[in-house]
Image (cartoon, rainbow, N blue to C red; front, side, top):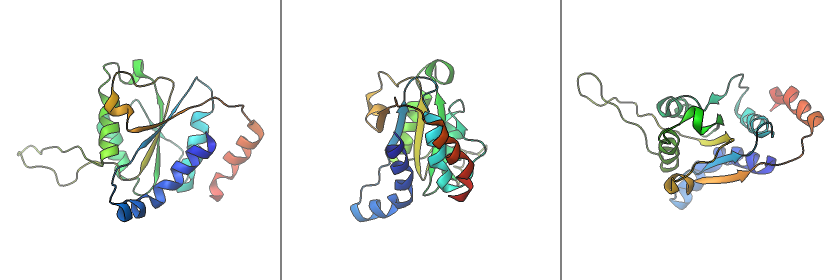
Length: 171
């Protein structure tokens, strides 16, 4: 888990160069799934700290639009969406697949102004995303195929974790 998460975080910085060289402009999302209190959020937050010190992370309970708008600010960076629970966040199974598809395809959510003219700024994610979750996305193959799914089960090491948290300002 740790190596995969940190590799995904580092890929955010070099992804634009890879995409330019290969012509492949897709951006897979990292899905960290597993039981509660497994350390998913801790490791993902530590990886996000390579791009700054974040006192608050994006919670999965926001709308797809809010996540896309926040993701717009994470250009060439790694953004964590924390704590997806289908029954709380997305009971109809619509919001998260929409976000996954838009992020992977690098498409945005357009909107019209009151006068019927399209807004100039299109909300889209410009970096890479990791999502921590206790639940899996089901019956949505187009969304699942855009994910790098990691089942998180590992032994905790609080001593190393606490050192990492204290020194995050040095990243």
